[in-house]
Image 1 (cartoon, rainbow, N blue to C red):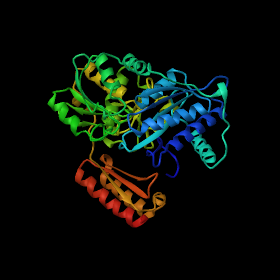
Image 2: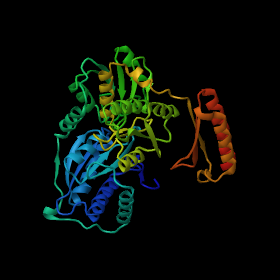
Image 3: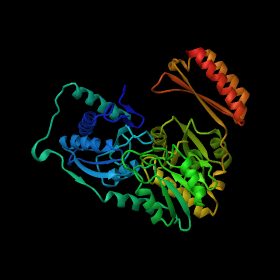
Image 4: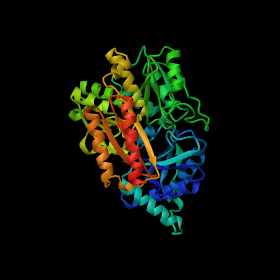
Length: 452
């Protein structure tokens, strides 16, 4: 698998790449590393462990719990809950560590292990590196120091986690959702109970699809990566709009009443204006990534909102937000972070806030989202090239310069080397789709000839 930790924990095919032995070993390593860092100083350590409904989550949860308890950590099992719920409960319960078992939007055979630090924040890169190093050291034979007797961790279920998280979501809503009919696509995932319960308590009339997880059907033709069923359901039921989550419910995408997609950039735009109106958009700034649509940037400029762009990945958006105290950030893919109420992307919270804005404004989601126009965006992956030479190729620099001059102020070029594969992503935006395709195709050819 190469480096174990990616931008969102450790992922792989469950029982092939990500085995029970690995999950157990990583959990023990995490406990030892946090102990060395002084996190457990002066008290008995506690961890919150949750998972999405994947079948493999059952044995991986058992392995993680066994690993933590064997390292002297008491474990609160919260069962099937969204990733942001595990993060929230880690913080509100004062736990030293949170663990979520999920591969997010990936297909069912995959799974993943994600660690949260005290407070519910993602672990720092250096701690992940240290966990990986300690795991590798002991995997090859170095013995662990193991507690015995009363020093071993105790394990119990924390069934109150569901109600506590839903109550939190309702408490932060600025207004109720009475009179609003919404279709919810739960991706047969971790929010299948949470999201319908939260929207119902908030007063919405809901229609649910993709809310019958059986351990095998997560993300299967539904959810935020497959919006066709949601589009059809919104029109069939005459709903005001629809909300789609991914498998672990840290994402939110939407569909307006006419069945058109509302992506993460548009959701960010709607929420940015709402938060500014309420004085909650600190520094009148929103954080997005370099892959955000140029139409989003132009809309924010027009509305007088500053845009800060981070590297691709919600963890980098979050780092920028935390460093400078910004309140709102996210990605085109639907990861939206409202930092006053969540420490990570929260799809249910995002959907609720979007619905609250529709009710408060008296405007349709389609009208609210029209604050920005999505410019045509073409993405071409160029495989089998030397991604390390993107920045140093004079031929490529010349081609990019020519493309930027041709596109002018209403276009954009981005060349992004893959972090894991020998390929370069060519992204071009333009006011006209044909121009975007033409420029992207030419640049892809130059990438192939210059770096191949």
